[in-house]
Length: 209
Ligand code: GLN
Figure 1 (tube, rainbow, N blue to C red):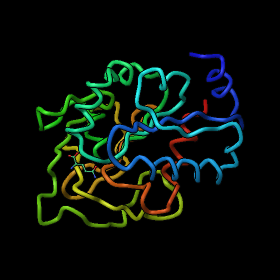
Figure 2: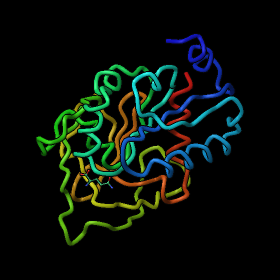
Figure 3: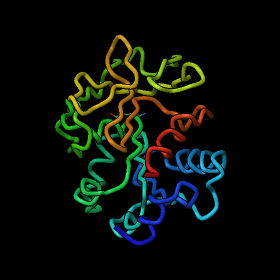
């Protein structure tokens, strides 16, 4: 761990360095949402949110966001850019949405995805079928103050099983759609698209030890 990140973990008011995996998918939306969340928390000074394409860019980051997009494509590009081991051994928290949630799993129903295995869960990529590829729902989220979260699902996955170390934050009839494990959070929907920053803030608060 770098001296810089040690300092951050000791003090809640010091900056936080966030990387956003920028291989494919909705990268700029994640950068914007984290910038807004840091500002709302009064932590924008000395903080940064930057795109990550190469292993060296991950160094010194306290958090990584893995955005939605196409998990088979992102998986292939993670291999191509030699990022798999670096992400698997990353010491910070990971905020993963949709395709990102698929990548974080230990088991995925599609052999074209090489999962990172960072959250003990089995994920079904094609959970909603064609006719319901996109929908919105107001979800109760475990431990989240301020009422249900308006969740936007776009060709979303669900987790069909989560291990003992995983906290299930939200579940719908089709399966589990939000989980936490340690500092990691994985969501089947897209909080970066809805303007509600409560989940970003919760993730950031969990990081600062
Ligand atoms: N269905 C996509 C996949 O399998 C994920 C969709 C999304 O990230 N919005 O990767």
